[in-house]
Length: 174
Image (tube, rainbow, N blue to C red; front, side, top):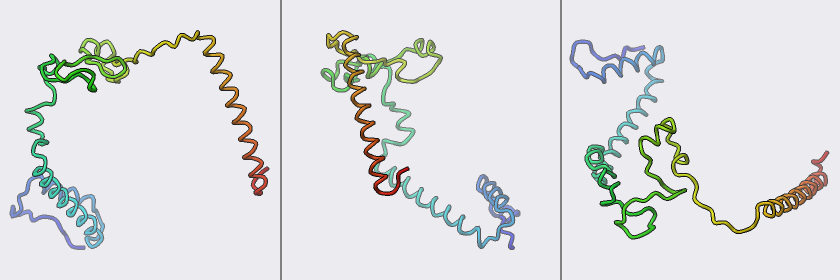
């Protein structure tokens, strides 16, 4: 087995690349280079494709660079004051500013987040949308729902029996 480590005479002072090569060499252990080349060539190809993709992506979407996004965040303090942010989901005319909508969105304060133990599950803050009352008393509604459930359970039982009978006809039953 040939030694494929980098020269130690300073001819290839690559810094991080040297350390990566040494780590890969250690991981390769006693594997023959003829076997290892398939892995290395695949990684080199992947790196090449990644670089080409990044270059094309940068050319097509220069506004998505991290430095641009950091310098121009999508929302800033003036947006929350209503200077630029349209009302949510088209509810109202643009420029009316942000408004909390139960069951849809809410701008939580840091104090509210602290009260919830810094748990950021949206439902803790957004809540539920109000449901319109249909005027039907709870007891009547529950009685209808339970009756419907019983009908559906009966139908499910009949269907189960029909499936078992069909399986028996096909020779797969008990």
